Image 1 (tube, rainbow, N blue to C red):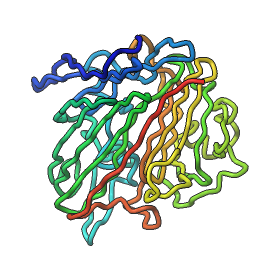
Image 2 (image 1 turned 90 degrees about the vertical axis):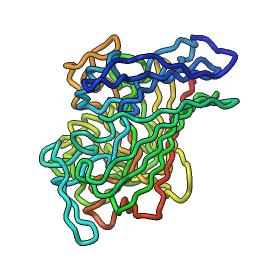
Image 3 (image 1 turned 30 degrees about the vertical axis):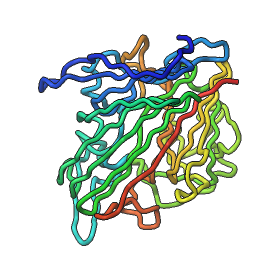
Length: 356
């Protein structure tokens, strides 16, 4: 891939769903030659091609080349997550005096919106171009009772790629009934394009993190990272810290924890985390308005799934899922995740790629 004269968005068939609906892949290209491929099924980011320090491009996210594996996307590769990203204990919460039971799809808990969730449905797609950016706006109306959640939720997602190699994800939602909302994206990144991420260096701007119980539900504590392998405030080689003896790393089989970012949502878009691959020189910076980021080190990838050109191997990719905290509907001291009629859910996350 080489720099081009103008931004563009193209589309092509990507397969057929069991109910006969066609799936489309949209390719966003900026003037630097960076490309992002997105599906209208699950609003899935299926590929991100970025250059290394020598200008050689590689695809730095996990995904598939056909629609069929995405129909059983148990790892949620690249998908939008909703209505509620991360876990809700036992799939239960109470709201305004009424109890709700959601699907238990990560026994004994509810995970990433349930058995269907936003990652397993079609979205309406509207591509657009600007002078210095290209993107797609996805829309969908989630009906009252879908996956057990109350209220009709109208959602708009905008993916925009600019000429500075920054991919912006903007989320917008309104509801006609109070409901939990916590949207995120579940892309798996490997800045080398292949191999292990243990040589990657990660930095997370967080003084505290959320310890979890044996079911990966937060205990409620906002623990100080100081003196623990969760102190990632300075650039840290993942392989140097991930196997340090620590009860929380044992529970998660590595990192699978929410970090409490040092900025507040009302402060706007702030640098939350960064990842660097020393071999390729690729760097990814993550900016967000969210109060937390879930750092997951691919501990449950086992090589049984084969994606684009390679198996999805153990610790072969990492996730940085910007979000509100897990189990927030059941933990009143966590930042609020209840959206009510008349309110607007609006948040933004940016993944910016560069080299050094």
